[in-house]
Amino acid sequence: MVFWLVTEVSCFATKILPGSRRCPDNGRPSVPPSLLATALLLQTHDGVSDQEAKDRADYDLRWKVALGVDVDGRPFAKSTLQLFRAQLILKEKLGMVFRQSLSYAREQGYLTSRRLRAVLDTTNILGRGAVKDSYNLLADGIRQWMRGLAENDVVAVEQWAHEHGMERYLAPSIKGEAAVDWDDEQARQAFLQGLVTEGERLLDLGQEVIAHNPANNEQSERIRHAGVLLRQLIEHAERTERTEAGVAKDRVVSVHDPEMRHGRKSRSKRFDGHKPAIAVDPDSQLITAVGLLAGNAPDHDGALELTEASEENTGSTVEETVGNCAYGDGETRQQFADANRKLVAKVAGRGCRDQLTKDQFRIDLDQMTCTCPAGQITCTLIRQGYWQDRAGERHSHWAFAFDGMICAACHLRPECIKAKRGKGRTVHVHPQERLLQEARALQESPAFQEYRQMRPAAEHRLARLVQLGIRQARYFGRKKTLFQLLMAATVANLTLVATKTGQIRAKSRQLDLIFSRFSTFTKSIWVSLSHLATRFDSAGLQKSGFRLSF
Image 1 (spheres, rainbow, N blue to C red):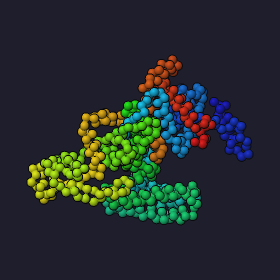
Image 2 (cartoon, rainbow, N blue to C red):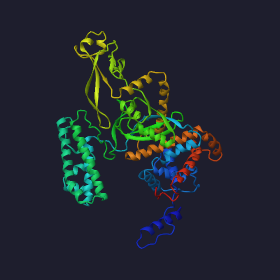
Image 3 (cartoon, rainbow, N blue to C red):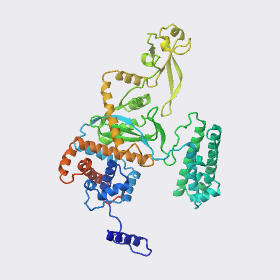
């Protein structure tokens, strides 16, 4: 131990002393990418930090077996693991390890079918950034902008704030330093408006700094980024002040992670962060595609992309895509229909409980007629404005209007119309009415029961991902959080294949004689990881260390 410490200190001194020569054997040896990729999977499975992952690779026999290193070996440094992860993210190799898990499942004979079904579902991930109210959020944006301007002037931010009279923004909480009656709404609005005014003044002050700095300068990019964020916060604060609900649409909720958003999984369940979406094959239970949405994005966003990614990742054809009623809107159905794909999802219910619903009216789109529950067919097709789709195109909005005199004499009027007498019932025609009619017909048939039984497949896989730690983001930013999600999905697939193919039982019997205290995972999954690591090396990442050209 003493010899090792003296050697390390000597090498460090050789590097920093002026005029010294470098040791011929100085530096760390290169680390195979396969070993680092395996370490990332083990880290995800055990849910440990980078330092703990490094310590387990050095001292835990279970990790040494999985990594394939000697008992006295120290395979990598913490910074090496961090830099390798950064290279995977920067070089857009996020899905490489995940796709290899699906290839391994096919080679083991677990994924045999060339025709799959994709069951889609989402959950929520709590973001890493601190969520604050509008006052402290705007103060954080101003503080970040001040740091950029102070760095440009080569002074401490405290000195820059003192020279410009902005010391209060360096406090931990702007509200704690303010003498405001928080029960007075006008005082609160005046305080918020004062923050907005000072923020706009600082933005004007920083425009001159940006104009005089080179466009490709790293410092200028940081200042520009802080300026864009501050301008967003000012706009959101102004909209929040004008919005009756109190929260502006698409509001930035954290300065530390500007990609976080307010989201809802239900009327009562709210979260701040991101929304992961997965596609699962109900027969094999394998996760075939993974995506990450904004926290406030609807569940159906990216549904078609997930289906296409499932085909690309598995090399199989997705015959049907199955989702809950969140995927059953008309535009999503139209998107799948245009792509010649089948989407099965429940149509959400409509209307009041004590009123006849639209589903009880028979709409004939070929003859363009509508028959009410009382058998009345006399109605007029009228145009009621326009609607705009996701692509921004405008379309006519049509409806069937029944005569008010006829409806007044109908015995079903109390159950059908809540409007005053003299007005008849109006039945709106959905832009994708034909697709919705087909979906309702399937939903009411016995064949829909099979699709109901597929839904738990995605829910169970989401529960497994939550076990692997995806409920809380480990990193800032949506791209890094997607990496966390992909690693968890890879581990979920590998452990599933090892369990279903009997590798856990066989490998446990073989290793029990040597390592009686080994965890079930390390006894079984190291074979899968070793095979995956070999494929990872052969995929273009040569064993020359993490300093690679990907």
